Length: 360
Image (cartoon, rainbow, N blue to C red; front, top):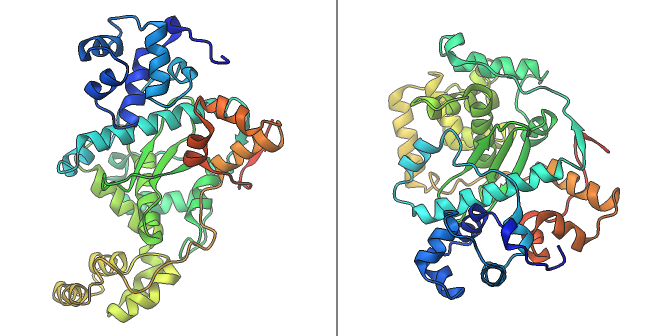
């Protein structure tokens, strides 16, 4: 728009979205643009038309181009697992959670816009399995997904690559102090999306990613059992009982540390897996966990997993396609995102490769 102000095209929900994304209260923003809080509230609710002057002030107060307020994207709440998420995180500021969901909405809008420029061809389809159809045998569902994607026996060395081959777009985010690990969405007209806390250690990152895959594969509507089901799915998907059972017999802390790099799973998840598969008794499990606690391993395991190239590439490849194949410079790319360039760099960075074929 080259800086032209068109207040009649501004969408009030985008004003509220940007305010929440930046963690600014309605009262504070009203003060910044020199209007009453009541006036701003009516603008955000669509009860009062924003003026050209107010819109100009909003672009400065909210550090974004005027185009941001014209984005046509519909807005989404939390994912289907949001209810248990918010309940478990009741001690976390709702403001932090709202800020994260606002950022997720913006990234969804960006992905929808980026996909107008490219087409990609997943190697595998994302299947759907209703737990009710499998008599709640979640392990069987995880095994079915592995088979449908032709995965070999044993550990999955690069889980991100596997999911991207199925067309799942993985987006790393800074989830700050929300205490959340990941969120997943399966929205009409878009590939499956998984938003990941980029600050997680690699073992927890992988388990969270498998957990979110469980939601995508099994859950179209919320249920009180969905979190436990997703955990069960992740454990079987990453550590199939038929492959790991013999290695978990008589497991101890030292053996868990030895198995961690091979299975690319935390010592904690290996020990939990041993208990659920009954390769150790409840008494043995309790003793091991007391030792883990005494050594401080419950919060800081001694063996750290290397990334080993296991990083999201698909979204970066789409952005790189715009730059390298379509000739978009950085300023033009910022215009596509309706943000200033420094914020685009902060949100996305640059990547070069993908496991999927990008087609004009």
